[in-house]
Length: 219
Image (cartoon, rainbow, N blue to C red):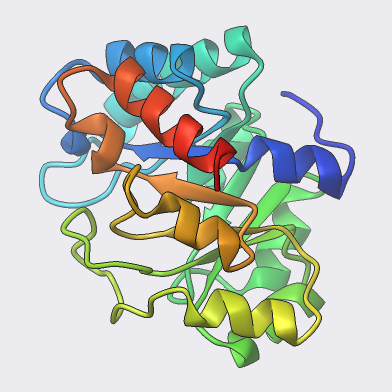
């Protein structure tokens, strides 16, 4: 398990945040992840959900395979929602949504691991912060087909509102983000962007990650 000691280290890690499960790519997930990290991905979230998602031993095996790749490269490995899996393989953290277990309960279960929480407004953000969130995932910023359970598109408005309200917690934008619009998300106040298909479905994940990283650097 990697150790993220402070908010500055976490902000840096969240810069280019790649999310993927077996159903998000037409290729072997491990190969896609390796290429994406070569291109500059700085954090990875294992999100094994949706139609045809792996379960049981197969899910566990894929998680371990992807975690090994991340740790070899010094990239934090986050598990979406599955706290039991995250604890079993000593993942670096967990990310939960509003429909998952309460933030406070998850914090108690995972101890000092990284805890990311999806928020859509200031009320949710305030509660998540009080109950132990380390960073916010905010979105969907733009239209996306990667998540069947995606909320209504918000644009960058909520990111601006959170910063104007004084929230200093690391924020990562998610939803329909590409190299063409990632800069807008950062300029609104986000510390990083999360992407799925902008890397996972591209013919060259390394090149796709490089383009995203470049767009963040010039924003």
